[in-house]
Length: 134
Image (cartoon, rainbow, N blue to C red):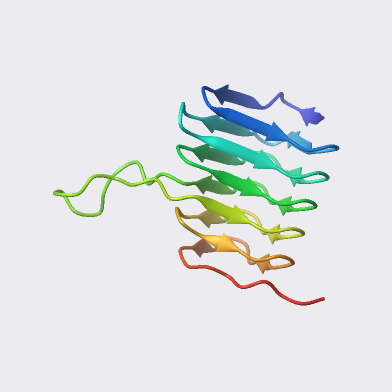
């Protein structure tokens, strides 16, 4: 279900949304893009806020009950290499259950964010974050 602008979905691969996933598009359209080799899985009761961008060339998995803030960027593909003699490589992203990503976070390729974690607004996550205990 969405509220506001309908999300832009480009799906040459696979996009799976769990039950009661909510996508908000009031302050900007959400975009979900999966290439032929890509897959996006979003667990039940997740909330994706306005202006988010999720891109998959391999795999992006978002767990149940996650809250994704305005303008978050989640991509398993860097689009270019760091060094000119290298090719860019896709690396899966896994976001656990009940994770909260604050506004404007960048989640980089290859990252795993553990269950119940909170990521501060405007963070760039380039290393794994362990699960927290409740």
